[in-house]
Image 1 (cartoon, rainbow over the protein chains, first blue to last red):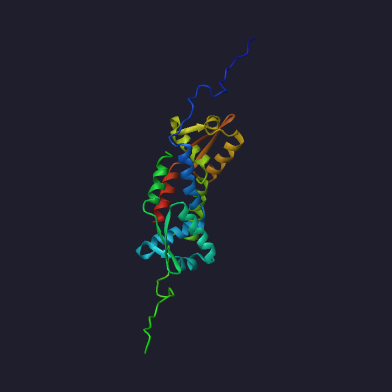
Image 2 (tube, rainbow over the protein chains, first blue to last red):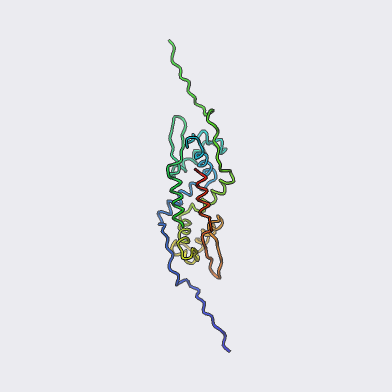
Length: 115
Length: 115
């Protein structure tokens, strides 16, 4: 009696190597922007600025809605500005923030690069 | 002689309070998904899967392109799956990953909520 023999291909030798249109530099840049948005407070701050009259908000008006200290809100705003998501203008005592033109469009374009 | 007096409004009492359409719960959920994309390796893994034939990739084919150990790649894939960005199917020895239907559309919608 002969037992049936099944040869199973267990290696992945015949699959063509995967490649991506996203370079390492692209990936770093995309991840950096998402990192700035990867915090609930910063998501709310972006949303508050977007909804503000004239599209800009004084930091003095951002403190109450998120319920954090001015220092903490300033720190979050600094990270958003460094990621290029908001612009900052100092007027006297207060800093005013607006969404950076095209910043969220650039993020959306990054997402399209992932599919 | 009388000195001119300028009354400057320094408080922000007359600005209507800022409000946002994004609730705290929304912000938590949005930030969680962004956090999964806030890493260059995970951005590249998403892009590799999107570009793979049939829209799915064996973890065995994801290791070489990112140049990390299988354990590290598995960890990154676990975070992407937990955020709902990819689906996972075990076939024998290997796990296969595909982009979750509509996951990137949901991210794009979250971005639109911020403006």
